[in-house]
Length: 163
Image (cartoon, rainbow, N blue to C red; front, side, top):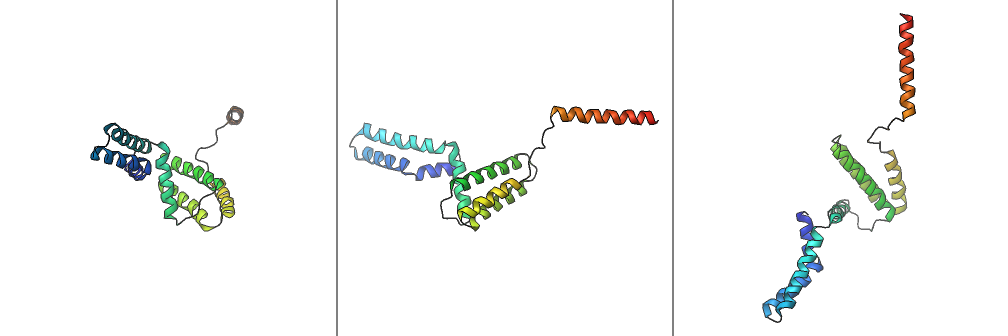
């Protein structure tokens, strides 16, 4: 829950319509139970909006979209690629490798989306996503470890024979 999600929840009709109508019913003295129920419904909707785990990410996404001047609706493939790049950038920030690089990568992905039509941006995002370096080194298999140990052992034996 953040301030941004609370403000968004308060601006939604799910909160203010029942809350305002309920307050009006209470103030005018029309019906106490109906007013209490409506105000409670508005507060419940605010609570649901404020504690929605996906809402904060969605609001950040909308801010980025607005920041880069996009007004069109993003395609499903574009959104999927942007989510994957966002996940990559978050891992990069968490690993504390280079937060500036993560920000540049995220900005570059949005620039690709903003530059062209949907088909071109999907192709470019796919290409950009596959060009990103892996964060973790590939793990050696057991066979590769055994082979490396055997070659090291042979090299040591050859050195001992030469001496």
